[in-house]
Image 1 (cartoon, rainbow, N blue to C red):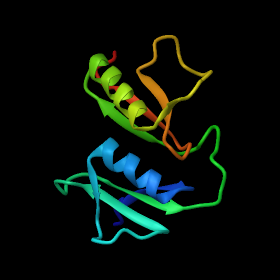
Image 2 (image 1 turned 135 degrees about the horizontal axis):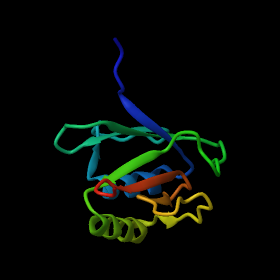
Image 3 (image 1 turned 120 degrees about the vertical axis):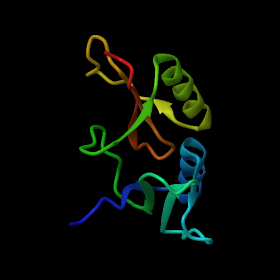
Image 4 (image 1 turned 90 degrees about the horizontal axis):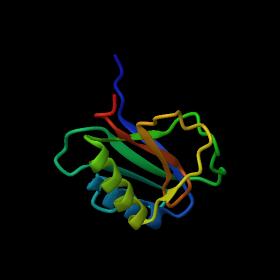
Length: 123
């Protein structure tokens, strides 16, 4: 049986992406010397999924088929986390498909990759 190792995001600027995701998730590079083309980030405490960053010349998809969901425990935590992530360099995405009472906020990282911050206490 296989298991999920890491989720891989394509990036244009490795240093910028590495700094953003390290700060956003509190992750650290798995290897002592992060590569210039591929970096695996892991949780500082070792528990949880990894996130890999890979240099890519492929344009960002406006409506990606795969994206990250980051969980917040309450609406207040969601608001705080969205503000923190925006301060780190994320940007809000004007998302036309929000439902009437969304439990998620769509953001883009410093490379334009879309991700959501979910209020897990919502309905």
